Length: 467
Image (cartoon, rainbow, N blue to C red; front, side):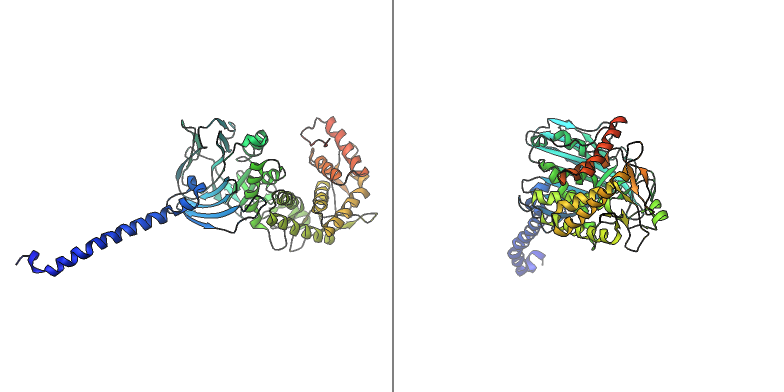
């Protein structure tokens, strides 16, 4: 008896259930496809950056006056990323990759303008069309270092970016651990009237001494830091360029870049309210017994002031909260380390370590920047501390002037003044504080003295008084 006649009931069962099995298979395939495409549908702005199998986790939004800024973390086969989606559709993407990849990115419509730094192939490049702009930092390969540092290695021919005939950018990574970021805007960057300035802050600065990663802002390590060496970078609390971008409220792209970059950096605030410097300084270690993980007043005041300004300009309360927490810590540090001057003013130590240290120097630029920041908080306790710090400068004004007309860099624990001042940084700090307090005779004396010295020595690049 043939098999075709042996089991008629079996054949009937097959006819009945086979379509159901096929339908179920197609349904499972369709569901799998929808799951794969889900990130593309939910996050269309991120589509250019996403791979198949990308897993997107929506984090708590960053509230601002313009609306909620969506924050996402992304896990995908080539690495992990952080993304910010702004209410106007702009996106900041920052990714750490551990696998080789190739990606094409471009502006909406035909690219009309391309700006890059031909002398620095690792720097970002900027593209514009009628319908949008794109700023890209190509992948920069690195190796992990000590104390949260990192050693960036030479970018070879398999890493970087290349312009294509379609007006797009080909981004390539060789498979080494690398960092890259991109900023996409639905508007032209020159609509803000700040294209040249934005170019100078990003294309000219990133890729050389400055690095932005998902772990924070890195900077070329000074030779007296431990560890250090050629190509070695450390996570610097100040986040120089991001903090600079935060100060210009008229430039929306600049504020958006600053928002994302500073938001990354804020993950490193400790419970006391400041960001430690993870490296050690041989100078601080030898002279003041300050080990790695120390508090630097200048670095922290720089980012604190940036967060205060950006928080107020954009209505980001999370940023102003960080700034005010830092202000409270700075006031406590001032009270703990203050050297009292003739008329009740105070001079504040530049550095400290939670495990304890010897009294440190007070540099004029640190004292000025801290005083200006505390006045700007408008908090009663902070302003009271700022008034005493200003009085400390007034009480010692004549002592800061050197015989050659320049200013001493610092006053040391033994009461002596000395050190070579920066070419114009302290002048800018004096100008900021003098403007903030509406004019002060002692500050104006120091401004005039420094200005005469700068002019006599051909120093340029300093800030100009507002008209």
